[in-house]
Image (cartoon, rainbow, N blue to C red; front, top):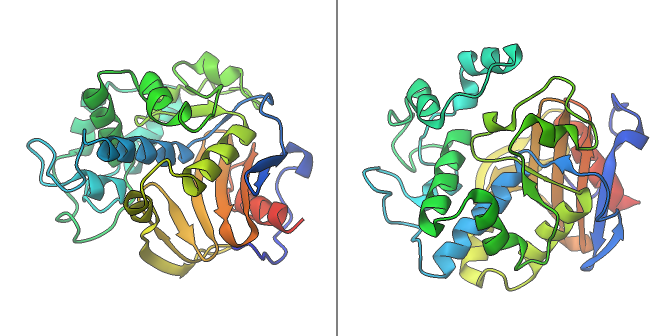
Length: 299
């Protein structure tokens, strides 16, 4: 995710299959807002974090009060430091998705992962948790009384001027994306929600989130406060990487990478260059889109 990449290995897909959008100094200079939508995968977490923090900004949620009957806080959920186990680590989850099973009801998922048995005491460790972000989603919906789609529209998408972005609800919603849905994957397996939108919409959203006054300085600083996690990731451009609140952070780059059946995503802002880049590809290797984003900055 460095803005000065070294050459990457030969990509497993052609460069023509990598969808890229670039925002430079606040202006979309590459990409089309009307391009076919793509799955945003875990970049959705960035949008969820922005929505939750907007509710903190408006006095409707607090960062450091324990959630009802829970030992952890919203801040800890957003930062993956709550200790909540990750449902996508379950072998039974991988097997069910591979078989094409219908998604488990949310309460069954929580029971299967034993969500109340924490991996560590809150703030005593760090573990990436899709389950934790499902709990963030639930908190947003309960606080607003809205569906996730309408809550994100009201809290984030409309204020940031980003249109034509939707929560995938059925396999057919994925059929309509750039690379289709050959395996019939059901988006409800992404329990925190799966946003679909153009690469340009993703790039504009992150750029405006990080460069406007959408969040007050203290809350934006919380998003950007990094828990250090390592010096490098093998084969990937990140250096001195870590996690904030809904953001993956490395030297020179802030955003989020994601992956799911059939495609990968990387959306990053490179502040020193004034660029925000969104890169998506029909592949399995997250390094591919991270390098593509770096190369788009350099070009």
